Image (cartoon, rainbow, N blue to C red; front, side):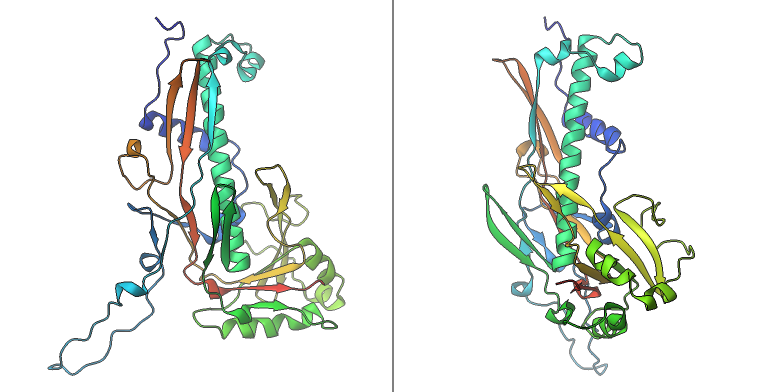
Length: 344
C-alpha cells in the first residue's frame, strides 16, 4: 500500500486547485486587464479572427420586390491562426512529502507527509498559472504597443500576426518639436484613422515622462485632482511606487506612466514598454484573449483556456504536472491605439 495514500487528481480537481491559487498574489497583468477583458475559446486549433473582429458593414438598401443581397463575405476572406502553445511542466518528487511545509511550520503545525505532498502540488499549480498569465501579459503588451505579435522560440518557428494598424499611427517625433505641443496633432491623426475613435488616455514610458514633465506648459496644465480612473487598476495614485501611476489629466486625456518588466525563459530582464514611447488609446480597442483547442485527448476536445494533467513515474518516484494553453490576444479595433517615439 502507498504510505502516502497517494492518488492522482483528475482534471476537475486540478482545475479546482488552480481556481483556489489564482487569487493568491497574482502577477501584474496591466495590459491584459486594460485592453483584453473579453474571453473566447475555440474547439479547433485555429482562432478564427472573423468570429472576433466586429462587423462594420451596413445592410444594403433595396426595393421591396428586389432580390435579397448577400451580406456574408466569402470564407476565403476569413483570417485564422494556430497560436503557439505554452506547456509548463514540472515534477513533484516523492521525497518532497517529507520536506517541511514552511507555511505550516510557521503556524506551529505538523502536517502529514500527504499534506506536504499536496502543498508541493499546489505550489507547482500556482507557478504554472503565473507563467501562463505572464505570457498572456507579454502578448497583450506587444499587440497593443506594436500592433502585431512576433512569436518565435527554439521550439516554435517565427510567425508574425499583424493586426493591421494604420502605419500613420506609428510616429517618431521629429527633432526640435515639443512633446506637449504635439498632443493635439496626434489626437487629430488618430481620430482620422479608419475604425479608430477618440483617445482618452496616454501611457508614457519612464524616459518619455521625464522629457515631458520638465515642460513648463505641462506643469501649468496638468490637472492632478483625483477624478477616478479609466483603468481596471485600484491603485494608480501618484507616487504609489507601483509600475503604473496616474499623473493626472491634460484636458480630457488621462496621463499614466508605466515601468513594468518581466523575465524571459533565460532569466533576462525585459521591459514590456519601450521607456521612450507614448501609447495613446481610447475606449474602443475591445480586445479578446482567445484560446485555441488543446491537442490532448485528456481534454476531451473541449474549448478550454488551460488544461492540466498529472501522471506518475516510478524510477525515481515522482509525479509530473503539465499545463497546456494556446492563447492569442486579438484587438477588435487596433486603430484606437497610437504609439509615438518621443525620445531619440
